[in-house]
Image 1 (cartoon, rainbow, N blue to C red):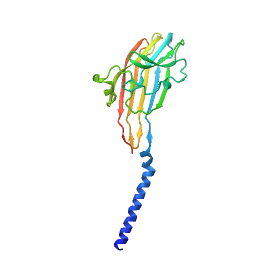
Image 2 (cartoon, one colour):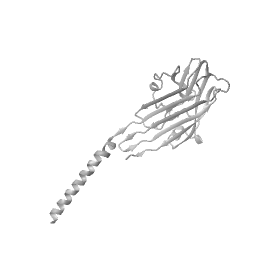
Image 3 (cartoon, rainbow, N blue to C red):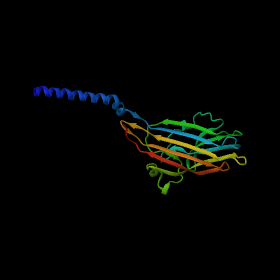
Length: 223
């Protein structure tokens, strides 16, 4: 085989390889490279131990809300206070001495447990946690803490208007927030998670500080 034929064969082989690479990219990597996924906020609320408690006029439970370091809500008020049919509970976002909180109120004689999921996509992509924040490790700012890798901080819940019977079981707060998870081209955004899992005596009244666990999963290249 002369040199011209050899070069022609090598050129044809190179072209075939390039075409194969392009086809593989279009079939497998192309969609991932051009795809964009917006960040999502989800908040799962489960409050148990309320069922059977008597109400003295009006009973209120308030819990923290997902927000950024400045207190801007991660899930809109329209979604948080939407028509949820919570067996006598009314939902509202209230401004308290600590900041905004999600409030459940009822005038029913007896109350039921609360179980409700929230979810909403949005355009911003920034650290979120359950607010308000009463204290952070080593007293760092909320902004600095939210942009770290995580830790345990102090938030607050609120109880009022209940008449617990003798030997009443504690009220269990199981609050789980997940935010972030955006994807642009081949890059995943960070994921933020805050969890409150605590028991509060049903005899408590007013604001009760509780621990919250915060965890950040760093994003990176997706393949």
